[in-house]
Image 1 (cartoon, one colour):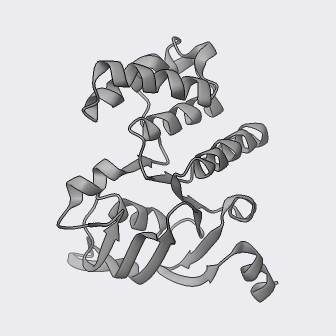
Image 2 (tube, rainbow, N blue to C red):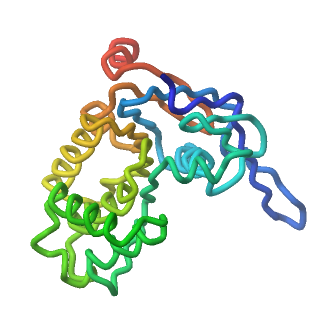
Length: 234
């Protein structure tokens, strides 16, 4: 079963320069298929169009052209249903650093319409799963980079999404924190969550992804398993 399908998905931004409107084609008519239950890697340099694609698929910005279905829902006509089925962790994260980790998670559950009892149960599960319990009641401002990133991951998972979007989740982390987060991502996949991961680290795509696509200048230039792509371009 495919959890993401896109057909000629395209995004053009309009900018002003030298007194005239200019069109910047950030994503150029891409076709993409992501299967349920896999870690799908989206690899490419900064500015390749990865984050723009992710923001379209997560309903944060509308596509200029093309169609997509996410978790069985039409991206444009059923955007509310799409948002209920997905989790999204951005590059900058969504942690309120003036609140504790527990308070962040409780608020996120309420925003998704979960009952108080259900939210408290889910928060306890996530704190244990991501090893956040020992500092859950500390103000998030005091967290290390790796701790805050794990809290970001918990925020994206609070409502048990079928599909989790992770936009360059390990950027800026030390090697130990990065390896720890890789373990958490694998655990999510093993529990049945589909993970769509953008990265510009070759090693990260190789280690984590079941399949991956390489993007450059707004286009998908290669797609396959890490092993098959290494054989093609070695």
